[in-house]
Amino acid sequence: MFEFKTRQRVITIGKVKVGGFPGENPTVLIGTIFYLGHKIVIDDKRGEFDKKKAEELINNQERMSDLTGNPAMIDVVGNTEEAIRKYIDFVAGVTDMPILVDSISADVRLKGMKYAMEVGLSDRVVYNSLLPDFKKEEINGLKEIGVRNIVLLTFTSDILTTRGRLVAFKNLLDAVTEIGINNIMVDTCVIDVPSLGLAMHAIFKIKDEFGYPAGCGAHNAVATWRGLRRKMGDIAVKPALAVASTIPVVIGADFILYGPIEHADIIFPTVAMVDAIYGFMLRERGIKVGKEHPLFKIA
Image (cartoon, rainbow, N blue to C red; front, side):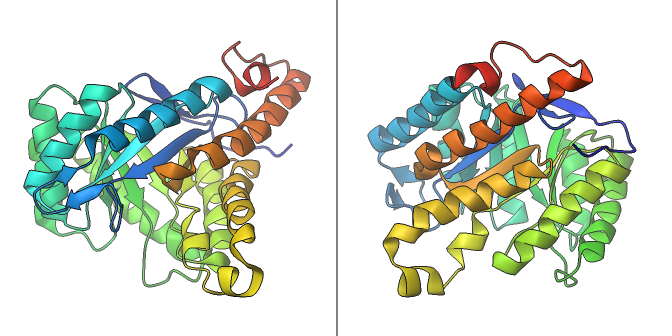
């Protein structure tokens, strides 16, 4: 088992703990809903969607979380202020899981976070995410709103190196700590299969040098793998999704953005297995894990 030279930080968002030494706290798994092309969305501008199906998907992720002991969060994507407000209202009304407020638009992200804070969700909403090319207006908005929880995404023009991710992280860290945000999750950015290895290396380096909770959107490695279905058939997709979201956990990832929430049934059992393995290994270090840990839940 590897060692870190820096004390590992553990943050709490809502009722969920993120971070720590591998195996200490179960890996947090984050499914995405209302994403681009999601079939349950009827009108992505007005935020109209199939409420019954959305609730079923959310309930299923909660069920898998209960079965495995892996805490869950939900990544809510909105294209407009109207849509993100409706999505936040709905998700907050059917689950107490932490909510990542996500959009390709910084303006929509800020407006979504502001709304969530105003309706009393400040302890369980997460700004997803701040990128290295942020504008000053975005930082000012985060400060004005009083955002507590944030994902830093190390997407950079130097995406082909681990060092580029570390430089991006340091710049982002300076920006958010300066305005008083301390609950920080670091997404080391996956865009394809080759970049997953670099993202994993960056996860280890960030934990080793800084101790912050780190993870990645590992599903992107499969989503952009053009030859997967064409060369190997549909049967190869589910195993690839499971592997992509599991191997970062082996090197210490604290959370995984596993992509479409429909994949909960695939991802939770495989990640829980790794967590259970680590949980048992911790016994040799004299560290005990709780009864809700995957080590005891998946038997």
